[in-house]
Length: 163
Image 1 (spheres, rainbow, N blue to C red):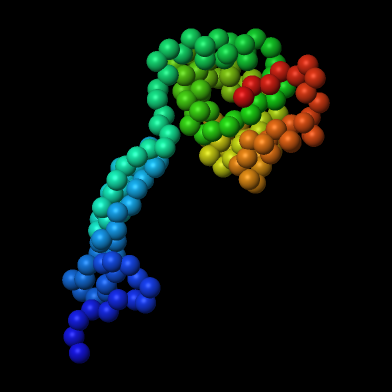
Image 2: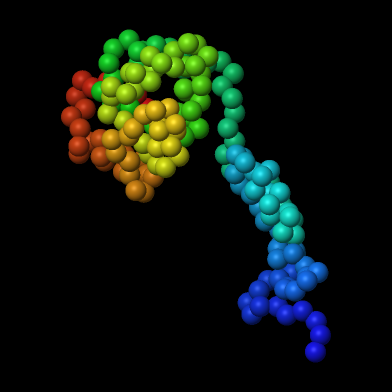
């Protein structure tokens, strides 16, 4: 008996054996992420997939960071009570901008003196990469859960909060 075998339930191109077709041959896969899409797409293409790109969200550099600088200056003007990192890329972008203004150290100190919340693992990782530590992070990565935590666990009257 000769030939290649196809596992039960396998899709097009799923073959085994030397010289067989790559496991994703015949599949078209859409990648909706903008970040690291080429890296992920190349890995899929190496396995035989046809890849199409259509980012659902695209990150665009801030052309005019005047408002970000003003908000940063406001965060440095008086102690913060709470700071919430909602996205990793947003937090890293803020810290990178602060670095270009020569404010990374004072901003890090201001944030370190506040109660820090991270909406999810990427935001938590960005905080930690800046030498900061979150006091709390939801398991669900939900902004609603962050809001519920704020309302239930913190007195917000008169508090200075950076998001």
